[in-house]
Length: 249
Image 1 (cartoon, rainbow, N blue to C red):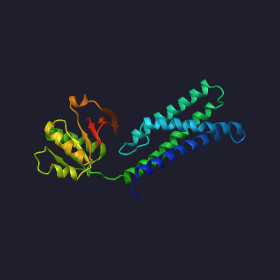
Image 2 (image 1 turned 90 degrees about the vertical axis):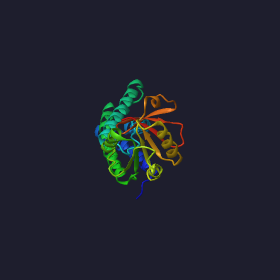
Image 3 (image 1 turned 45 degrees about the horizontal axis):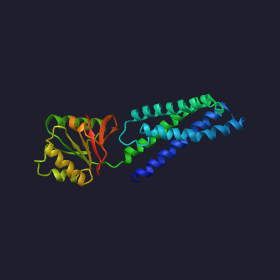
Image 4 (image 1 turned 120 degrees about the vertical axis):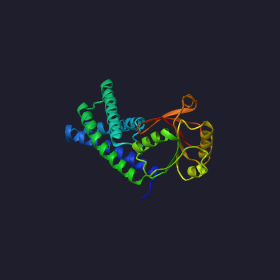
């Protein structure tokens, strides 16, 4: 089975909702049993609110995209997101007294939600690592900077097979061919400005995904947005035809 980003995201979201539903059902079964049908019905009616909060929190903490993320980061973000969801839910039951929602059920739901969602996210993460297309990369940098960036990429992303080439400048005759042959283009900060402009212009024209280590000038540029890719903070130029991301190492 190939990699389909949209289908993967839909399956991930459906699984998240099912986990939330199962967690609430288990919590109600433990606390309320089968007799208090009115309360059970109310708790199920409250579930869509939890789902909405889940969508918001998961989007904030990047839990709808697991590509190239470490499991420890996913689990930590999941713990924070689930905690926030149920703190907000508990605050709602406190301020709106007409919500006859058992706080014990909320606590149980939070625990079971984290466990079930962690298992589901682990399954999805493993599937993505297995099926995600292995896109190759070229690095434009020289000397010690090239070695430092290359080491960081290998350490963070495990790009032993993905990082195909290292090019020290546009003086190298085949620099365009190297861009053509790879999907990712990494550019060092110490590369001459003239070379950077040539690489950026050509890489954009061929729809490559571009990352570069910024200088102070580039950090101050307008039309940029901040993005966190794994544990590396980045700055993304937002008004461009193809993706250009500033990589801070």
